[in-house]
Length: 103
Image (cartoon, rainbow, N blue to C red; front, side, top):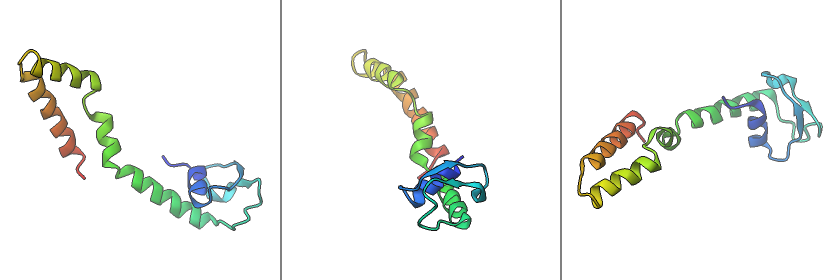
């Protein structure tokens, strides 16, 4: 979940806030909010950032792709030992992740 603080900083990287609740109206500003950021702007930015996060196929794929260790073992078996089963299995796993999280 994208926090209100993340949304505020996305709107103004120099904003200085001390505490926030789950309500954009309850922010305590250290700098008195010189740019006049409104609760509506914060809520809209929070929703925008959350949507971008939720639709980030690259991040989702990376979380589910085979590990580097799995890749190294599969490549070793395929190239050095000439056993392609591990490579084929790894590629099937990669393709399943790509289908699950399309671009």
